[in-house]
Length: 152
Figure: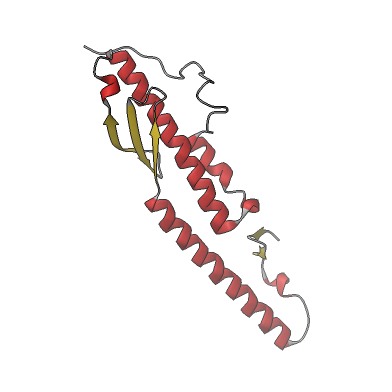
């Protein structure tokens, strides 16, 4: 018998033995627990659909917004990049995307915990999508993960 959110999800064996009234009570309790899980799942779905996260590059030249899927929904370039090379502009944009996706992952984890609790095991599902936030602060400047040239 498996469980999700602390309630049994197995078959009829979870009803146990006892009087008919006891079994009916247990069925009603399980139905109420299932309805509660369904309401939490619907709330989670709504929050995930509305999720937006913003990230800013370390040089403050680019700001990016992503949705719950990590898709870029907005991009703002600042005057910090007015004299920048195309390579620097690209790096600033990619850094901002990474920061926004990391923040989206943090928000998704918060939504999972709010809806299903820490022990749900669902948080790990979001790590491949968003990655993990970089450790340390701005002083930790790991080599950029992406390299490429400028076209044209």
